[in-house]
Length: 319
Image 1 (spheres, rainbow, N blue to C red):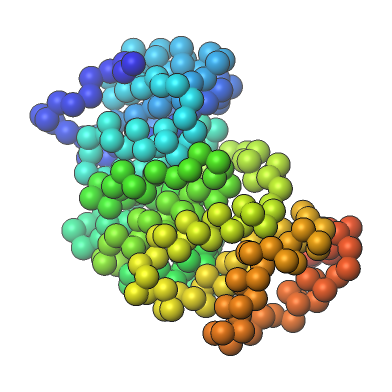
Image 2: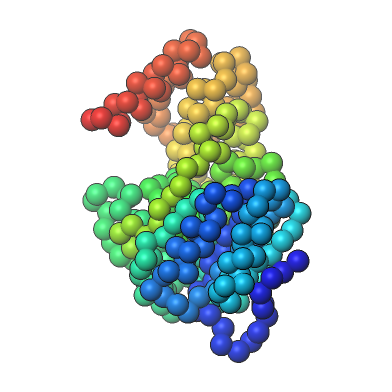
């Protein structure tokens, strides 16, 4: 079911903003209002109610009735990635952005992003201030940016606070297995960035306010899940470029391994396929594993690794 007029070929908006909604009645109206209040009026908002069983769907319909730029799609629950994919298909603009239902945008976010959406780029990345302080290049070559994506560097790895040209958002980029509910945005980025050869424009100011992310807070890594993410990564990187990005994949897999080691006892991951393949690639490509990573993985018990992680988090927070 769709509320609002979708499909007109006359007077198409310049930007479509897609939001997946699931049981977000406490925040969804504030989000929609933050987009409607942008100083860039030439936009449409595609809200995908992903089978909510609270009052979210009714609230979204009310927003559509008071502003014709809001279109609401109601569907059975299929997961966040599928909802984004449906919203992308139903959108009309040449440039598309994504926001989640518990987030808000600064008033000038879309206008600043759109100002960088020029002919020679397919992606505009916001919130670049999260990169290391030494990186302030307004345009990054596609070769360098691909390395950054594979490493999940800085603000890369989430679709929020960005604009994407429609041509790179094929149906495949959001066709992600539903069971992948942590890291699906990383897979999305991998699929997008290997479909373009154009440089990426970066805005180094804040263009997005992220709400609470309960998925990250509650997720428990395991070796099987880390392997599933890696298989999707291998499917996104063209085979002839695999060696080029091997060092980057090892770097990100080591981060995943640290997460696994903080959630599982050694006996559950030391003989896993994920760990054995990573160990083989480290040896084959001569990757230099940081000493602190080696020491962490050598800690004999799960509680010691968790304590080390908590102390490291405190150090990073206060120092």
